[in-house]
Image (cartoon, rainbow, N blue to C red; front, side, top):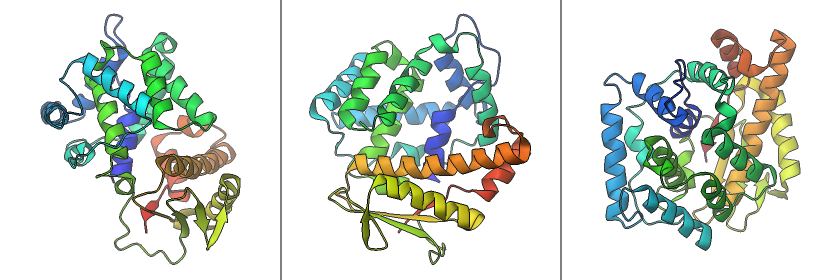
Length: 295
């Protein structure tokens, strides 16, 4: 559930015409607020409370944009995101945010097709992050450098980028940790699951055999193609598991499932997955679900 929530937060897009005088980031955030019964009042309170908590823990100096910039400079310098806190922002908002993922997909298409999108910092930041992922340099320092190359103090005065920061910290801090981004395996039969173990050395182990990323990609594709709707990927990590390894493995799993969804979409509906109707997308997702559980 938390992993789904993280995805929802990152794909949130506008559902109304863009204003020439209002930044897209504000419209993105307003879209989220409009989908909540109280128009985002409770969510805004959670944002403020979590920010105050980070200030209390001395992770942030204060609520200014400069404080956020200094935080990412620290991450860039130390190549580390290990902050000592046990308050999960994602958990705190899990019951507040109720959104239609398919509607968000439609909104995302509208956003990408808008005249001014390529000139926005939303696009520039995504381009930088995608580049980091493509070249396999997914280290905290590189992500921080990428963020700092696009955003300035004024940007971090926006709730949109504050939430992005909170989610990043939530996914990587030592207490809530990477294992908490996985779905718990209660009541899930793992007999036919593809079981992947990431140890503290950065090794990927499947069926007691150490494999590389290329081999993992082929295994995931073969497993998903064979098991389809019954596919379950069970991921086991240690507290010392390197975040870089976790991200690389997670990206491969998501990319291969996305590839298979695209393949079905083009074969069955003659179009890309992100252009399917809600009903069509639902059928494809049922065929290739993204079910990743914690061992």
